[in-house]
Image (tube, rainbow, N blue to C red):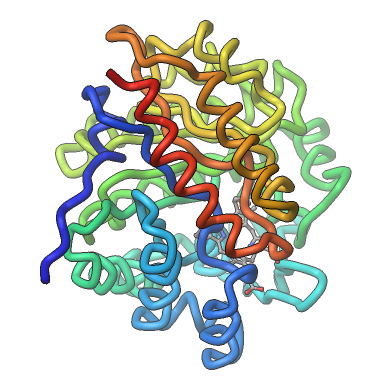
Length: 358
Ligand code: CP3
């Protein structure tokens, strides 16, 4: 039997009146799911999983099939771009992502390979095509990228970081080179998102995981400026202009008004942001996505139900001037999360949120 088409997520992003709050979860496909761990084992390693469209499709579908979420997100990673630039990504067990050839000198910036979307990253567009076919319009597909600042952070640090000594060192000591690197990354990100949309991505999200490490002034110059360019390029290109764009700066709660200036369609909020206050500040201009503390997903069903209810209550009633709310966690779901808590979360949001839409 053909399933009913669910476009609640896209209608919410277009600012249309909807009957309930849509829900999807950052990192919804991942290690907390036994079926993911099984497919990953079959693939051998994480990058093979990303680079094999049939397997990427399989893990993209797993949380959709199991929980009935309202959007699918392409199974991939933000670090595909630096990998395609020649930095050689490896995912080390217990360490996280590491580049064999990080950016360490100015000439490394000059020698960056500009990725060709049709050759270097065709595994991503192929995966999108396979997933759209498999989804058959059940729910929309979200494509994504890392922000230029976040990608550059990994490229220069060579791995995850707590203090960002190298990237901030470059920013303070040689801002021109920093800007040159960010511009190279931004141009590839725009190409990449365009290729994702041409292949079938129906909405886009920019993950600025490390923008919150910056001072307000440097956030504007080194992160927001490039996200602004991305949104402007997408909105002026006939291929991408109608595709909604959501920006998420983790730790960026104090900058929501500035982020809205990019003309993005939605803002992702981490759990430190007061949803009611965010709605009062920018809720008439953008859709707000978020923002339950992901650690609640590692606890019990009661905590999940009460956490979800609190977020829905904080957004409150959907008045005509409100752009809308998409339920999500405030950051990715963790490997320690209990799968049965996702069931409780989805059921709570689906049933309880109707109270706020009339
Ligand atoms: O959301 C989804 O389900 C789609 C897939 C997705 C992954 N990574 C899969 C993944 C998305 C959207 C990302 C984005 C991503 N990747 C971000 C931005 C979002 C955020 O979390 O702030 C960042 C910073 C990365 C970089 C990255 N990739 C890290 C730090 C890690 C290791 C952390 C960890 O959980 O081990 C990865 C690997 C990664 N990306 C995994 C998954 C499912 C774990 C891989 C595995 O061990 O199987």
